[in-house]
Length: 308
Ligand code: DHB
Image (cartoon, rainbow, N blue to C red):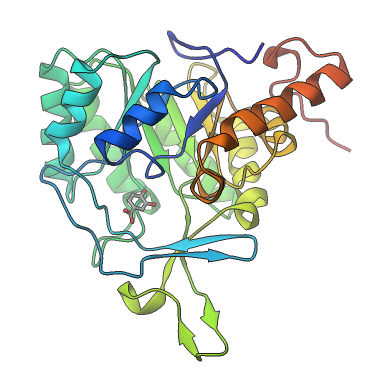
């Protein structure tokens, strides 16, 4: 049994798509909605208006992961709000938003608050790929101020997408801020920002935007992702759930995320590379591991990572 919960939302399965993967167009969303092995659906981070995103090439497969600089291509906020409120909803949804400024984020959240949408919302404070726009979640004071303004009016379940942190003091700082607010969840990690890949034969970068700098995902991000899930689970209020994202290519990786404390696990690069079949394969691999260990539910081992 891989059922799991985020606050009061019950998911029949542990797995989600990572935002941005297979969730931009209506067709992709429908395919996700109909997939038996994903527990819920996360939408592509929406901006107020539709965007083409950055110039191509903007995604490149690496030997053990990926690098991307998509630049928020999306159909615009109304499209995703319509999808999660009007479609034939068969599983819980997470509506992801990423305004281009604090004012835009607040405006989108007001629209969600005033809509009939009752599912989870996720505010993306960590997109690394928009030219000239820093990742809000690396600015602790601004993040705190923003959350203060949001929770003054926003009364629906809200989580935030975080970038990876790399210093234990930063985990202390962000957790202290987040613990002041009634967040449904944090989703950690977004891609490891502004990596670089070199095509040695061509002596060139591999992405067109931003001179080749891009967010790193996939297997190479797993240790950073596990560290962020673990460190935040050790610091956040129990009422704040964690969606573990980053580096999951197998049932073993998903098991590790849950051991670190993940309530849900999302799959990004591997879903892009393998297609929706990744959900069924990883699901089956996780169930086999649990069977071999005699575990019946995720609660049997969630957060129970041992220290040496
Ligand atoms: C994009 C990348 C991200 O990591 C994110 O959180 C949002 C958008 C992008 O490049 O489209």
